[in-house]
Amino acid sequence: MNSFYFTNDQQKQYTLACLAFARKIGLIDDDSLEAVAHRCNEENEKRRQALENGEIVYGLKQFTLPVYLDYELTRFRLDFASEKDVIKNNYTYSPIEKKQLKDYYKNNRDLFTRYHGEKFKFRESKMVVYKKIREEQYDEEINAILRQLS
Image 1 (tube, rainbow, N blue to C red):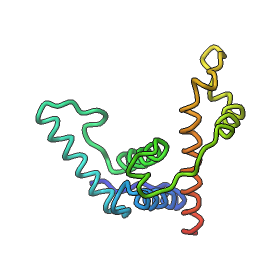
Image 2 (cartoon, rainbow, N blue to C red):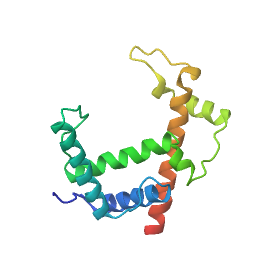
Image 3 (tube, one colour):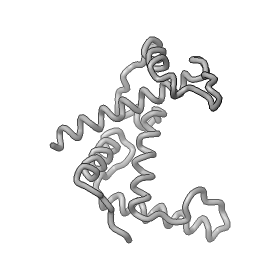
């Protein structure tokens, strides 16, 4: 199995913070890098067996360790933004008011523009705005952990 590839200590600290937060909110039981390697091996085995059984496998047939780590970190962020039930059992989300949604939409209009400059209306973009605010909350939580690690 390949080893992790961290280009610097900051990247490693960010990864450790994301893993710690994922454990705190119930997405994983073990936030060690060894556990990531174990989960990677398990996922690769599941994919190998599915392919042998003629099943469809979406994405890669096999993950390298760095790619799996990236996959996992992305999944944590998306699960948080989607407010998965397992997270709701372990974490109290801050409420998002309609005014906050509208302010985010107004302040980030470039995110809600179509190819030819046509704008998506607020009601068409409300769910995206909501998830973007949740992603910012995720980043705040990670930054709080990073401050503790420093």
